[in-house]
Every structure is written in structure tokens, then in C-alpha cells.
Image (cartoon, rainbow, N blue to C red; front, side):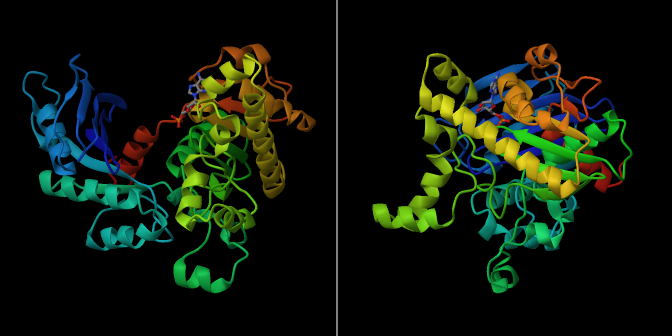
Length: 400
Ligand code: AMP
């Protein structure tokens, strides 16, 4: 059985085709700069074919058509007919309060995705465009939406409500939704398989540390709290996002610069975080390089990031009533041993001990980095959001 996974952004479309029986990717590609000059097409597949060339993509339809033609190309023989694709799973960023699980895309579910546009004005319209184009160009193949927010729908109201007048929640849906749910769900499921702890009682904290970063407190496999909020700006400071700050700073900056609120929005999303502090880069590799050259602001950015991580993890230990396992995942979590070590050092009071040598040598592979004496199991688990979308698509359609 073959499952196609689509991540349709405002100007790009990524895809992976899985041979679901062995969970292997048999083709993947990226259509970049859709609707912009100098569009580009990248593709590679199990036949060994690699494409990386300029192509004109005036619309998402062009991109999907190119993907289909490339998959069907008889020379590479990835697939002979679209009928071989059992379903298409689409990443959809915001499911609001409407989606607590992956859902087959019908008129009603597409209308509900539209209702989430105010909370995700950049992503949701692009995600839905991907669904609609695939419906048109691959008629008869079920299309499933897998939502970044869905995993967090089990949060209790005391965790998802903000201390604002209740009408903002009732009338405008202002509440914590959380993001990166597909990744948190994937590593939480894997951690449950790896750990010795009892399912219902298992207290887990998942740390998705990438260009965007978020934490989730998971009890017995269910999310009870998460650090991102109504938007992906809340929580820890990130590559270019400020994370949680005193909300009064927004109007303070707006008045200071005479800027419009949307400009403050831009500053908080694109000019802040470790890049804003260091003045160097949003990429942690650059920060470490600058810090090792003695750049004090790069060192400060790294210290702030790890300090905030320890504080959020500490708050989730309180929320969970203790912790059995912690998982690091995503670009920084999987690759940055210095950040992992610093965060784990801040949690030593728990009796958490990691094997420093093993941690240093672990990059992008699944490893338990805590020692047998440690009171908390610490894992590095590479995330795989595309595979997670494929698995959820198959499960919701009952294809296995
Ligand atoms: P992601 O958003 O999960 O793709 O993560 C991207 C981020 O991971 C980059 O911006 C880097 O900050 C970080 N990253 C990737 N590789 C490394 C590495 N080898 N060491 C430190 N940070 C890394």
C-alpha cells in the first residue's frame, strides 16, 4: 500500500510517497517558489533518479501536476497508476477546537478548516489549497487532514484558558491550542514503546527543539499542557521568535516606535529570539561558533534558551506530579549535544544523570542518553512528521 503525504505551504509544496508496508520513502520532492519567479523543483526516488532544476510553477495546481507526472514517469516506474495511492495525508497547521484527531476531508471538514483561518492566516489557506488541488487532480483518492493542534486537544481547560475576559474565548476562540502536535505525538508514542513505565501512569515531557520550539507534558499518552499557545509565538524563545514575554511590552514597543501593531508582530516573529539577542543568527550551529570565538551575546542567547527550557520543564514536572521520561527531538534536540547537556545539568536536582560521552556522540539517532542510575529516562528520538502523518492517515481510514 502506498500513502502520499503533502505539506502545502503558501509558496512551496513538499511531498513524500511511502511504501507503507515497510514504512520506507520511495519518492520525495519539493516544489519551491510557487507563484514567484525562479521556481524550482527537487525530486528523488527509489529508482535513483535525482531532479533539481528550475520549473515554472504558477500555482499549486502546477506543482501537484508536476509531482503526479514525475511519479508516473514510466522510466522511473515509481508508480504505474494513481490507483496505487491508497490515500493522501495533508499537514494542516490549525485545527482550532474542531479537530482532535485526523479527519477525512469532506465539505464539512473543509469548512471547519476555513473557520480556523483567523488563527493561522498564512498556513491554513495554503494547506487547504493543497487538499483541493489533490481532490481535483487525484479524484477518488481519500484526502485526510492531520492537524498540528490535534494532539493538544486533550488539555484540560485550566491549561488552555488565558486569564482574559471570557468573551474572547467564547466569541473569538482565544485559547491555547499548541503546535508541533504531529511531532510530539510521534515521539510520545515511541517513548511509550521504549520506556519501562506503566502506560496510564507514564509522565513524559517532550521537547521539540528546532527553528520553532515547544514542550509538551504528556500523561498516559495524552497531552495535558503545551508551551505554544493561540499562535506558535508563545513559550520558549526560538530562532527568531521572542516566546513568552510580558504582554505589556507589545504596546510599549508599538508606542516607542510609533509602529502599527502588525510591525510589533513582525519584530516578535522574525527579529527576536536567539537571533535578536545574539545579532548573529537563528541557527544554533552559528551561535556555538560565535560563542567559541568569545561572542558574549551569542553566549547569552544560548544561556537564555537553556534556562528557559529548564524552567518550562520544571513547570511541567509540577503539572505532571513528577516525571518519568524526557524526550529531545527536532533539529536542535536531535543534534545539539551542548544544549541537551546544559538542560540536563539544570535538572540534576531530580537525580537525572546522563552519559556525557554517549550524549556527545549522539546526533540524529534514537538513543537513551540517561544512565541506568538516573531517576528519569532521557531519550533522543528523531521526529518524523511525514511518517506520523502517513500512519495517522492509514489509521483514521481503517486501512490496516
Ligand atoms: P528544525 O526546525 O527541526 O528543522 O531545526 C532546525 C534548527 O536545528 C537549525 O536552525 C539549527 O538551529 C538546529 N540544528 C540543526 N543541526 C544542528 C547541529 N548539528 N547542531 C546544532 N544545531 C543544529
